[in-house]
Image (cartoon, rainbow, N blue to C red; front, side):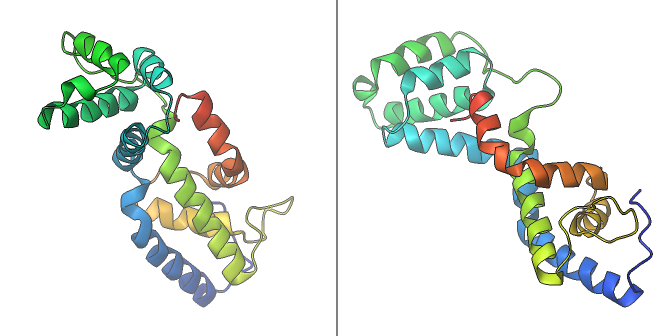
Length: 190
């Protein structure tokens, strides 16, 4: 349940929630775990193809349980196999694939996984910034519990759309979104 905000009129609240809800509808498909994983896999595969990613780092991540690195390597290798160019596949990938053919794809451990939420968190930070800019709102609440903040209104929309996040969590996501790249790198997301 969102905190009570009494210092805004009902028409203003309806306008803000309506616009944020529209913005949400434009990015909703990118705010799912599936989207985060798909984008990560596609990026790894694309960078392997462009030879701009250290193959040994991707293999190490896959061996350490990074499911999307494993699936990206498999997809990358499959393109070579489909084209009859197995010999052109980097030797490290060939070696990985020999082992991969003898085991099931890697899966993430149960529990929280940054890859599941990274695109959602980017979307939330963008929605908060857009709302703060459009209506000259602070992004998050300061010391006052009555002053409306963009994170409050974004929280109303997210709650309506099935995201179980409190206003404080939304504020934390917004505050920490600049640290996301470093968190992804520590998690083995290239």
